Length: 165
Image 1 (cartoon, rainbow, N blue to C red):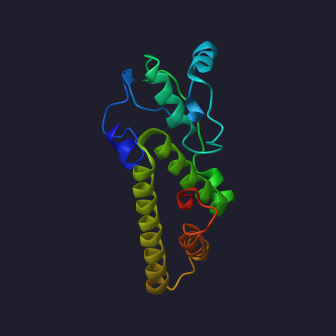
Image 2 (image 1 turned 30 degrees about the horizontal axis):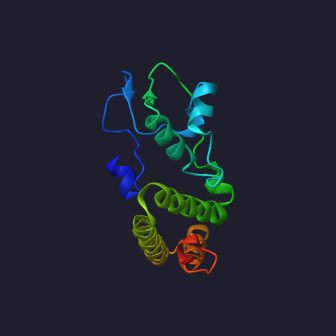
């Protein structure tokens, strides 16, 4: 839960995956939930069109007293990151807006603004690294460079939810 509060994704790398275990969230691509529990939890919140919907649902499932469980006997192939590759700018924008809305919903606007400032700082670092690697290697990492160049001013656009009064 602490990682969730900071806006960091829990990748579940620090423990063995050979036994069942309660977790905060499971990835939406490999989530299994009984229909009646899905209905009791309120289904997916439509404000999360893409990204954070599984964080939100798992949190509400836990509030019902149900378990969110990692089960080692299931196997799924998920080609993660494909949307980010095909439509990187809109996907990144949706990701940041969904994360903001999630933090407003569960931690308040102040926490959401802090997480958004952190995200902006991350984009600035990635932009600087992309620029440096382009200079050092003299290679065109143009796609990433353009993505981060476009993301930086996007954070300050009037339509961003964190700009709303």
